[in-house]
Amino acid sequence: MLGYRSLLSVLCSLSVASAMIPIEIIGNRFIKPAVDASDAGEVFFVTGVDYQPGGSSDYQDSNPTDVLSDPEACYRDAYVLQNLGSKVNVIRVYTVNPELNHDECMSIFNSAGIYVMIDVNSPLSGESLDRYNPSKSYTYSYMERVFKMVDAFKNYPNLLGFFSGNEVINDETSAAVDPKYLRAVQRDIKQYIENNANRTIPIGYSAADVLEDGLREATLAYMLCSIDGDEDDLSKSDFFGINSYEWCSGVSDWASSGYGELNKTISNSTIPVFFSEYGCITKTPRTFDEVSEGVYGGLVNTLSGGLIYEYSTEANDYGLVEIASNGSVTIKKDFDNLKSQLENSTIPTIYSDEVSKARIVTCDKDYLESLSSVFDADFDLPEAPDGVEDMILYGANNSNVGKIVDVDIRASNYTIFDTDGTEITSAVISVASTNTINSQTGTSESGSAHHPSTTSSASSSSASSVSPTSSSSRGQGNRNAQCAGLLSGLTVVLLALL
Picture 1 (cartoon, rainbow, N blue to C red):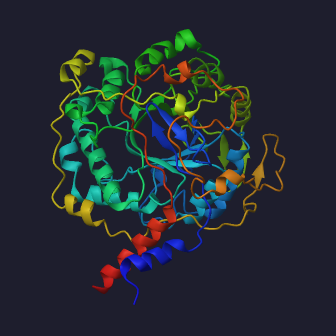
Picture 2 (picture 1 turned 135 degrees about the vertical axis):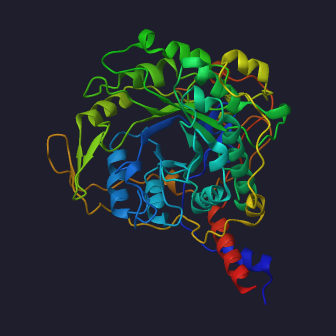
Picture 3 (picture 1 turned 45 degrees about the horizontal axis):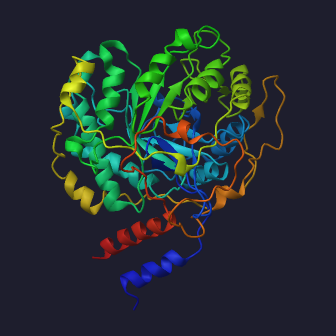
């Protein structure tokens, strides 16, 4: 009889569906590794949209589907997103059910070259931290759902990262009680990933852009620092998102938007900072001049891109497209305007060996209190709820562990209409060869890596101006995500037989 390790080796040698190489982090930049490990990777600028058709308020645990479990909708929307232009590479999904199968949708978006960022929470009671009562909502059942979310998505190479929270801190009251619980949740998630996943998965926070009481600057400083200067502090954020609506297209400019002040705030960040939401609707249709002039213009040396809010038109009327009750999609003028701005944006090519490794910033209570008198700069984090440490060690028993699967490259059954009402035919995504690479080829060499191309490369100074040199926060690449899925499935079977 084959031993456990031998059986695992056989399983891992089986052919698996092809996928993109996971995104890593060096210093204050996301990095897309080169296909050939002897080549330098490139800085990865987040360029995409927030994606929650139906809105988070439409979510219920009892629903038979969520936004990443309906393949026909994913075929439709992957094509529409590709039509925004070749720069589009990320969607953010706010609410999904960890018990549902997301293999086809994640594989469709992978084929389209789109990475996915997932919020681990939901708007339902008990499925997120209560911003005004975090101690009562930081529970075993809450963390169990969070860990099951990790299990459901950990083996998709196009998972860019998880958001631990969204705008939990948004006023003086929440700032006085929430910070240490956010870091405790991040600590628990990272410990769970260390024990139950086969690659490092970035964990970060999506912040409300609150300038009052110095909350924006204080929140960033609190989330990125290392307690006691510990290089391996798992509670700190790997990235930081800002939900920013300061620049209203057609109304604002660099001077009036506050982007200059934001540039100063994030200039010394030691982790990637990007807009997890942006796209003010004071004036419609939106012209999105903040895209080319701000995000990929004046902020390009400090900001790592951004996600436009949002894909589909919901009650707040922010959408780029309209989704009818029959599932058909109509593209809006906002979509065309955003596409034009992205086409006119020059995103620099910066190689990974031009990016400075991040220094370790030791948490400083006095410094944080100088930024905000209402922010709770407490680094004595709460212990995990009873039973959570056992889950971290032995898993949350979620049998729904996702994996990339082979999908047909075809059009959706839903109809897509252009802005003039013309039906778009042959709406089939295009698949680049780099979307079907399971892991890097070749061997990483010591010393300087090769640059596969020298076209439009930015200077080293622009890449490293944000982060001083010291230790790296680079994540480990996923060299075989499918193997972990087989391992998890095998473990479930073995436990059931014991």
